[in-house]
Length: 115
Length: 112
Image (tube, rainbow over the protein chains, first blue to last red):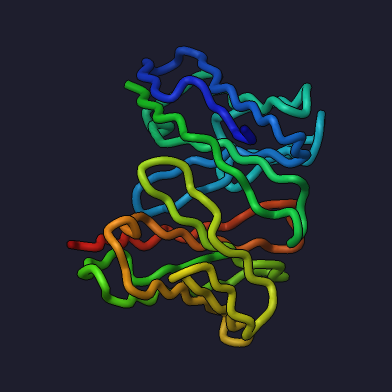
């Protein structure tokens, strides 16, 4: 089944404790992206990657890191989480970019709480 | 700054009603507009619109784009309780790879 998977689905952690949220897709998609969703603000892009070893900042990259060493995986790293990073996080992938390829498939989401 | 505004923020209707959800946008070098439905999980794709005045249709849902007035509408006819969800509108600017700029969403609740 074609899908985007994220782990963990739920995480409660404390300020400053480094964490990684994994994202994997099995559709051989070139493009992957991370979003956070907060009430009243919609989805905001954190980072995106257009291919292996190619990543760039989205709208809200502060406090986050990403890497793209393999096409299928795009982990999100919070080196020193803070309470303002409490949010619902989505990973998404698409075949490429441009109108024909821009349908993004979303993972199930990771609900992160930073105390 | 690229911006997407959806209205209303929320609405409650009865089964069988028709609803219209609005999405207006300001974006540099528009490429496409997308609608997603989000229930208690990940957003799922509904429509992508790139050309003005051409209606996209899928069952009871339809959407149209007006590139001159910079807005899109999503219509749902004969609503059902299963249509209850958050509906998200997103636009894609040309310049930034595959970036999507999302609106805050419209919360639709359909009562039986």
